[in-house]
Each structure stands twice: as structure tokens, then as C-alpha cells.
Length: 344
Image 1 (cartoon, rainbow, N blue to C red):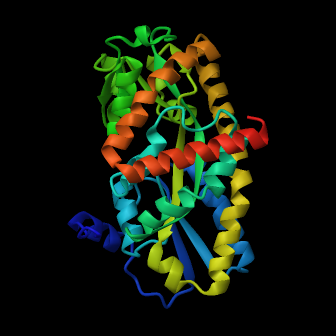
Image 2 (image 1 turned 90 degrees about the vertical axis):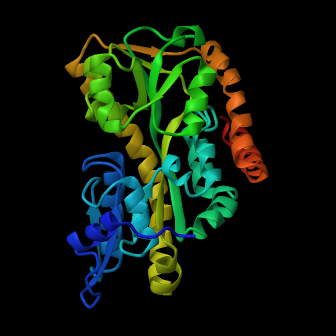
């Protein structure tokens, strides 16, 4: 059942003019979880361009960067109650609404081949079947999923084995699955708000953190860390969700078809963009800090962490139950089939 709107969310509605009447030209409001210039912003801006072009200007798209309409949880609630039409929503956050979505916090679930990931994340019968159905019960229409790049460890020492993580305070997002993952890897996971991470690294209350390259560059974490380590354990993924009632009952058939067509067209676009963005951001880091040490774990080194991550799958099933088991096993089968088809 949809929770009651908070006073803060109602204030956001009024302050942003989101409760205004609809007599004006049609406008779709699209809120993202990142700042302007980010991967999500690039996606939203291209979505805006395509929709406005296809509708000959009859529909305009307003893009709201992170912070302008509230927190990630508040953005999702605004979509649920129909105040805005579209938003990015990370699986870590959606997992509080639909526990099965936490499957995307399990290490070594996605492929190292992004063609495989693109096929599964855009066509999966599991994602757009039971997971999407569960989200619809929470008034959210799942439109697509896409990755934003490898989750990279940063530290002030080499990390190549679980033993290197002993007593290492790794900052994670506030997620039971991520905490379990880093416990399995041998670290001391330390959940901490995103805005406090730089200070935590600088003051030594945490020893390292994990984020995609664009976040490491944007938040300047590299300034207080000497190593960046690729272990291949995870990619940062996001979803694009719409209001369920808006999608099914407020759009015309032509508008709904235009929306679905545009989302499908953007799959190739965003997979290329995220790769370009992360490469550009890595070059910026190295230009600003040429002595940054880059470490890519070997297949043998990754295999040790991959083996340890199997315990996280058991934890997921224990937490979510049989529906979680079905989702996990279904996704594993889809990734395996896509790997075989695409030569992963």
C-alpha cells in the first residue's frame, strides 16, 4: 500500500509548482538521481530531445537534476502519486518497496560483457515480468534498466585478496545486501551517507569506498585516495520508472507508443554514453592526479572474490524467500543464455 505523503513531499509539490493545473501545453516532468552533466542527465536530455522532436513540440520534457525535487525516496513518491511523470530510481532504493529488486546488489551477477548486460537489462522476462509486476503494485511502471559503469574500489593501499580487506572499513550504501557482500569479501562494511564520504576518507573514519568512476571524479574522492581497483564485482545500475496510472490511463495510445519506442531507441545510446563518460572521467582523474595507482584484478584474483560472493546469494534468498530464489535463478539463466549467444 502506498505510504501517506509526507509534509516535506507536499511542500516540494507546492514549491516546484507541481500541483498546477493541466490546461497548459503537455509537459512531462523527468527527475534524475544525479547532477546535471551526469550519465542520467545525458539520458534524460536525449529522451527530452527525441520526445519533443517526435511530438513536433506538442509535448515538452522538463528535466530536474538531483536535489531540485528532493531525495531519491521523495522522487519515487512523487512519481507514485502522479506529481511527476518519470524518474530514475536505483535498485538499492527500490529494494525497500520490492525486496526482489535487491538482486542487483549481488556481486558478480551482471556480465563483464556489456552486450550481454544490454540484452538482459532491456529484454529480460524476469525483470519485465515478476519484478515489473511487483513494482506496478506500488504504482510504478518499470520502463527500462541500464548500467552506469563498474563499481570501483578506492583505497590507500593495494587490494588484491580478501586478506587485504581485513579490518578495512569500506564505505557502502545503506543496503543489507551490500553490507553482506563486503562482509563476505573480508572487509568491515561501513554504511555512510554519500555526502559524508569525502570527509570520512579525509579524516580516516573509513578506509575506502566503492562507486562508479564518474562519482569518484565528481565527488573528488580520488583526492584523498591513492589506488583505484577494478574487481569486476558489480556495475552501478539504475531504472527509469513512470507513474503506473499515468502510463496506463493518462497517455493516449499514440503517446504511449512514442514513449515505448523512445525508451527502446535509447538502449544502444546509453550503453555507449556511459562507457564514454567513465573513460573521460578517468582521464580527468589522471590529469589531476598522475600518480593515481590503477589496479585491475586478474581472473584468478577475481575468482576468489566471486567464490566468496556465493554466500550473498544465499543471504538474498533467506531475506526475500522463494520469490527471491525464482528471480535470482531466472536472471542467472538469462545471463548464461545471453553469454552463450553473444560469446561472453
